[in-house]
Image (cartoon, rainbow, N blue to C red; front, side, top):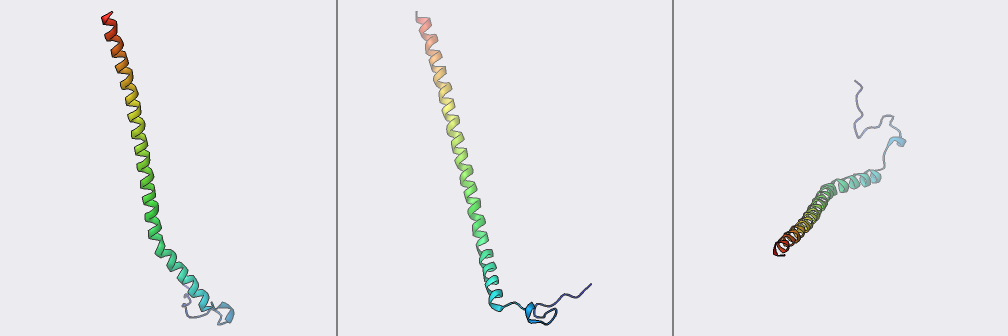
Length: 88
């Protein structure tokens, strides 16, 4: 297996293979910043998903309650109609 070049050595010992330390530092600090923020972003997405799921649950509960009230109103109306038909 071919031996890998060490980070401090050049393959051809020419100046064109070297990376400017300022560029290397900028890339490193950007990567560190991105990795540092990644966990916060992941938690934010998780909380947003949880909030959306809970809002859908509440909406479904409200719709179900509305439907039950409609059934209750129909049952009361039919019961009152039957009671009134017995009186006549």
